[in-house]
Length: 130
Length: 130
DNA sequence: TAGATGATTGAATAGGTATTCAACTAATGG
DNA sequence: CCATTAGTTGAATACCTATTCAATCATCTA
Image 1: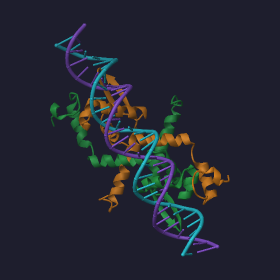
Image 2: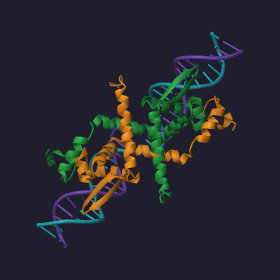
Image 3: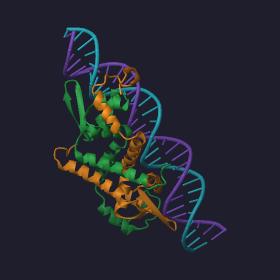
Image 4: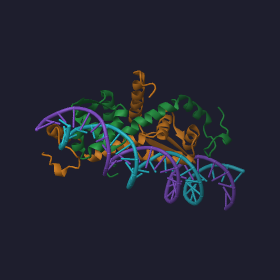
């Protein structure tokens, strides 16, 4: 593939055209990259992280979660909806009460792997105060 | 711990007080949960996902990345800054050109684990069209 | 040294999102 | 059947963030 300057919105000459072509061939289709970003986006909010962490320990109802995070049921419910749509949690209904729990262990692994990561970084000194 | 209704902003009775207490004891301090959310937040953008994917394949300069994603150098540079601050990428300078690459393999693992996840979900049928 | 190019930066803008509020549904119990 | 409570939902708001634009720095070279 040859890059013609007039077709590019980037304001620069191609530096390593051949390398760029190779990388391009190995990139997944756009849709998959969007899905991946969306997946991480759901985990990228402190309220949802707290919900996930709590549900990782124990199945809980909306009311429990509201008390635990000291937030309104409404706010919790909105965030649970996001987790539900991302299939990160599942739920069961018992009378008036809805119990939520993690969808599967695979999710748990990714979640815990991220946690490991930030703590390993912390252990490597000199970023205590950043 | 006893939950007094007047101290709670959530508009409900505590359903499972003892369970909530147990879970609360196992929750990490707030700061760590915020750090975890921030970590995932950085991966939760399609531009940054593309950059990470490309750099996972090959060390590339800003110009290469701009051509690859068909975006301006400025936009790329802004996003690389976010990845840099999250220590997800590192860089080296060679004359005018700045080469970026993934910070370490650990990041790579998390990144690829997330990718596995969305594809496994896809394979489990009946969500092709959602 | 002046011009050109790679890269970064800050301000502005437009689009996205978390929480609140009020209204609502569903289930329970008197 | 009515009051109460768990939970959900939609609209509004306030905050956040990705990209653009213009200006700037740094490096190379003619």
